Length: 260
Image (cartoon, rainbow, N blue to C red; front, side):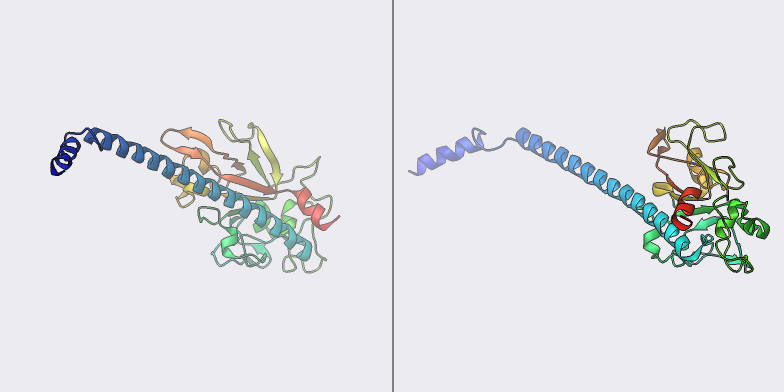
């Protein structure tokens, strides 16, 4: 009886049953590959959730701005100091560029951040720092004129004829270049034109200074008349993806919500 047990042990020690070192190595390799794949899948899922959150934040902000117009008869100026309140003095906006004034439009700070935690960029008509432009119903800056800007005229200052219209593009508005283009300027294909308001989710590289971003993404923070829809367009092997998301508020949106 004792001899039989010894024979079984001898077989196990000789490798006729159990795992060899090669088999163990193969098992560990397979486990490692499976774990790597699982981590990659989880990372991709988290990325998709973040971009979905960015889209949702942009849509919510866009709707909140339009609701603000319905109640107040004007659009708010950008928040330039990060306190959630629009910044203006003597009726005019302190700047045409800044963050969304979330408190002014009844949102929380978390509501106006993209899926990567970066504040949504808020650009408005370039004429909002000029009082005469804001008081002129023939200028797109009038969409942002409040009672402090034009106390002698009932709000809203803007009219159905306020540009941009089919026949008049207006001054100081913004064009959004279409995704996938090789450049962004007046000759580029456009996704939208003559927008009084543009919202931008900068996403992955939103924490970087404008000068540190790839050339395509700098278009969305250089404060000129053009914005560029990213849509995960490839930039280069070094730069990664152009993932900015741009949403506009058109004059039609504003008038349809308030004047119709």
